[in-house]
Picture 1 (cartoon, rainbow over the protein chains, first blue to last red):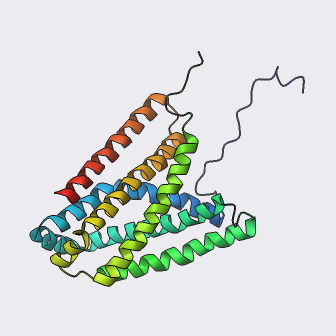
Picture 2: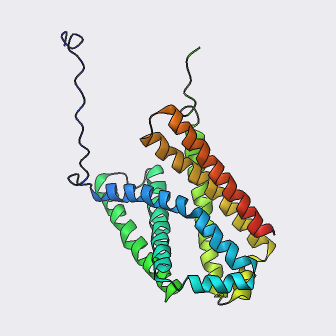
Picture 3: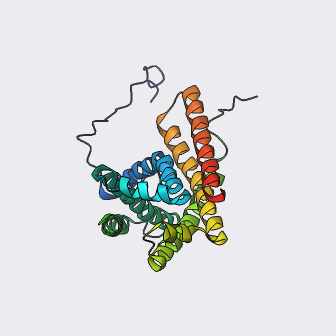
Length: 132
Length: 114
């Protein structure tokens, strides 16, 4: 150990090859929670605009109904619905972890799977009710 | 006097707790909104407008949005802190985020109070 101060500090190993890193399921839930949060943040002005148009005048509401028929608008809103559902369900999982529930590994993996099994069907259901 | 980093110290616990508290409040509003929409089933302008015209619904919605902007601020600030190391750049991004969210807040007030 006495030679460590004499040696130059070695660069720490770094592995950032995203194509090769294999995240466990709770890891996916976690990064998707961040991604969905960031996506929702960027969408706030768009969603406020939807609210503004739809609530201010009847003409605004009608023209919005037309805009909502466009396939890419539907796709965008479906993505946002998924983002909200995932962020919501993963957030509840985080609140449970904060309260020290399901902290051990098997329970944490199960709760991560539950996040997907709840959020994806919920998102599909809401998108279906909204757009079809 | 020790140099304090202006964008990274001494407000962790308050924001951590605030993020959780606003999360719970927003979850409650989400459930409320889903219930209201399920009951009212608005299909035209009058129905949709009717959902948000009662004063209590406007207050609840504006409260939800206030929680959202604080919650989003903590989350985005965490992202900046994790990925943006240069202090000057991070300061600009954090101030920009606050301005963005405050402006959205003003817009929300306009939507529901006009």
